[in-house]
Image (cartoon, rainbow, N blue to C red; front, side, top):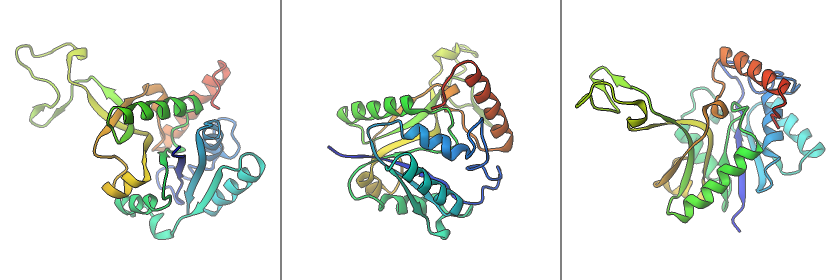
Length: 236
């Protein structure tokens, strides 16, 4: 059976959220990296969890986590030229594609704190079904039924015969939310992208997909996490 390989990119030097990956978050002393490792280590179908980083703090923490908690965690030092804010994503993708010869990549981010083991299990199951239906990859999305315009007018609905159709009748647009990308490493090498030629778009709930890209989002999602946990919601 083809192995599933978790992949977490954690570069040094976050510019918008200082120390984003390691600063304490909602009671997790080692922050988002600790939370995400605990979440992904709950996914039994992952044979390995690669953490790619050029931040020595991340590498050291992941090595300690591997020794103390779960041997599937594999810290992997990333070349500095692929860990800068100016690094082209295309170059990083080509690098990742060569890391594993055979296997299915489950690429996620520590900045999705509400994607837990049960969500990853559902994502992998959905990928299996999608492959059986002829798809070669899966990406998680927000399914948007909203009135979207550009400078020329509506882009996802017509104003005829009525100017304001029901929102549920609007053609949905899929927003990639970066919670997970799933595809074989071989397909990744072939197409040079983290989305294949025949992707399956998997909608997940917006309250699950919320991610952290700005300082204000870090503060807000930490507050939401604390409220959830106080109400009995388990982050792990």
